[in-house]
Length: 205
Image (cartoon, rainbow, N blue to C red; front, side, top):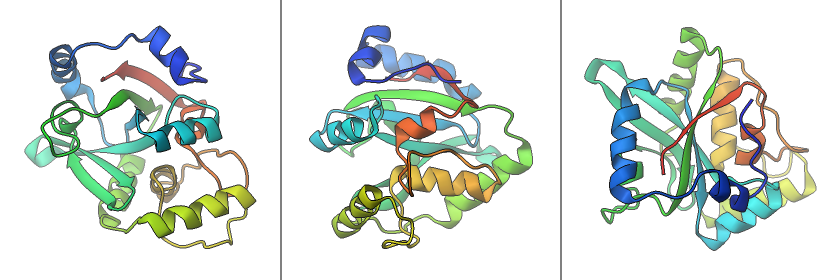
């Protein structure tokens, strides 16, 4: 089970922030250990990130899944983000160029793993992640999803557009793994983090 991180403040106390060069060096030392199906948790500095943390009572505001392309030894992050939808970027962009301005992610980033993930389930997660790239997630969809989480009913505006946590949950569901969530159809990064099978591996930023 991942360690308890109920707030961003607790996260900062346990894992003090390091410099950019140190983070890059740390990522490069970890690189060969990442696997498809690994999870990347974010705690952003944006005001919306803070609202998500308050709503979910946890330190995390975003989550994505790692996809490894073994044939070319490349690692990617697949995530669903506002106004873009499901996208895939090199995992190294976390520490080098996350926002397209040659800067690392603005916040904290952690690496975790769902224990005992078999190769066939890992492949299923990869299939879902790649098959559903470009699914849109715009501002209108955000407010529709927000309303659905408030009322806690899956049937309200239910479709194949995903928040970050919904995307991860759907990918794991495709592999026959059912991640727990708060209530109704609401799932947050903090809820995924709290699954007993999730193991914290390291801080990236």
